[in-house]
Image (cartoon, rainbow, N blue to C red; front, side):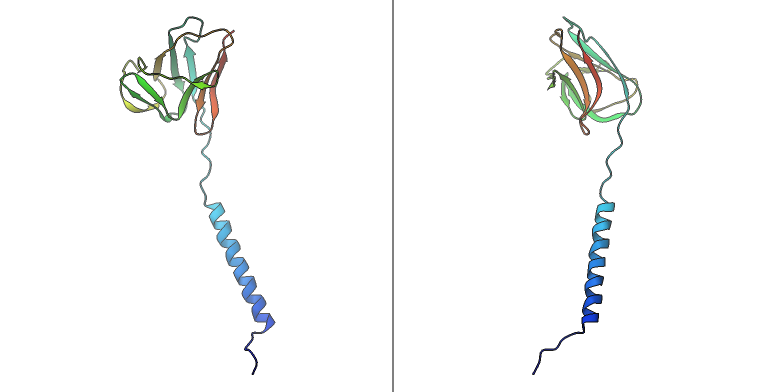
Amino acid sequence: MGFPSISPTVAEVLLLALTLSLGFALGWAIGSSRKPEPPLFPFLTVSGFGENSTELTLKHVYGETIKDAFELENGAISWRNLEVRVNALKVTVKGGGKLNGREGGGRCDFKAGDVLSLPVEGFRKGDELLLVYAPQGRPLYRGTLE
């Protein structure tokens, strides 16, 4: 008694169908994956970036809103999607930070017309100031004190 078998043609058709099904499934999974978010182009100005400065002021002049930029509670700022860095280190603000003159507000978007001020300990020649859009790691502003 022999083992039952299928014809080579039927086996080839089944193998081809299986391969095409897996190819379509993989293509659909890759094609429907999350698209990268487009870069933001807000126009920001900075004042107070100088020697012996005690306050740094960031103004969002126009352009896209930076969603969930930071959290502001009792003047303390926790950076989220916007980071202020001096010499590549995040600036720590434990008090005295204000958005549009207020020291509170919870999680904040940074939109056109907003002004963020934060206390600083002063800068020295050669210091580099970076404003970074954290989700993309892209600098929105870069300046060096000369």
